[in-house]
Length: 173
Image 1 (cartoon, rainbow, N blue to C red):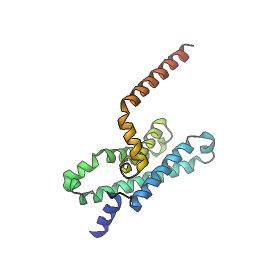
Image 2: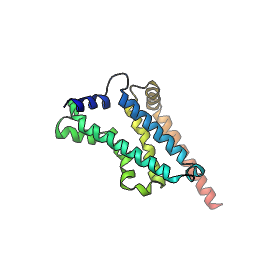
Image 3: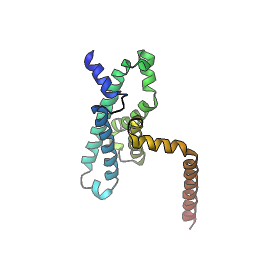
Image 4: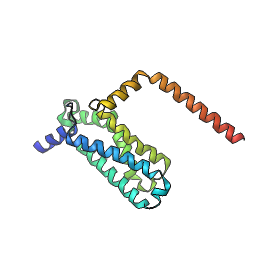
């Protein structure tokens, strides 16, 4: 009914300005990323590892709640109406990024310390991509990346080659 439609407009707001819910999710994503950065410093994390564990679990449940609300209300969009629309939503780029960024933390909470899980949590930053059209700085970054993707890919390839070469030299030394 009406409350779900209000939730839909808060979560799927396509207007120029972000809705309150979108600003809140944006802030939580940034906070999540800051937690990952702070947590990566062993001297800070070792003081209270349970605190970081709890924060990550709470953030994962917040992202789960947001995802479920989006899934429940996505049918108000013509693009996502009906069962096929729900599947279209579930398998959309942003939804898959959302799932990848929080589901592993909920399924395997004890493995949050592995390198792979940290990388997966960093994928939460990709959730910001859905705001790129309404935040000028993100829009500019995406335009620059799009215009210069060949140079960026070439630089990345050179970097990987240098790292591999250096690793081989260090291994053989």
